[in-house]
Length: 186
Image (cartoon, rainbow, N blue to C red; front, side):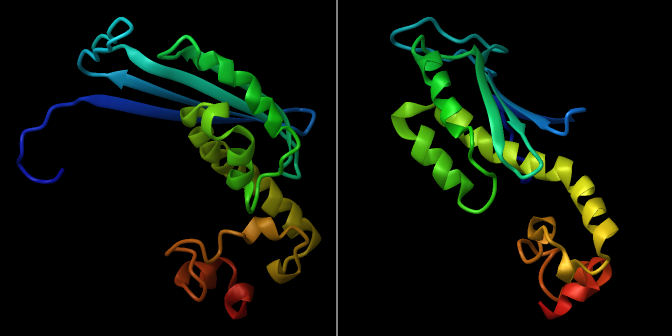
């Protein structure tokens, strides 16, 4: 990738996120992170992690309603490096009632950050929010278009909240011009 230098695989991190729409209108979002070692990882106080084995296999699942509100949370540790790691799982129940949106990760860190939670699960929550947004966006936009074709008058501003958040969706850019020309004067 960066030229002709020899390289050796040391570690593989996999993040998998899945979104499920339920018949009751709620969304289940599951995010899993695995850390697989390519070489033996030696510890002073526990047995080594062997090549091809996971140091972490952690999952966090959220039940989210149509207003971006967390209705339930379940965290699991299939593989964790230390016996005390699972002691952090109950802390994630403190996220029930939070709404995904501006300031969400700050609120998450206030409730489960530092020594209260697990840094890997807490970091994974960003992906939960992104996955929920990606999964629910087609429904949201369809609902808004049924009510009003002009996005400037949509009642749910989160549907176009990504405008101005990246190069492709920059204000005045080609993507906005083609997809939402009404927003060019915004």
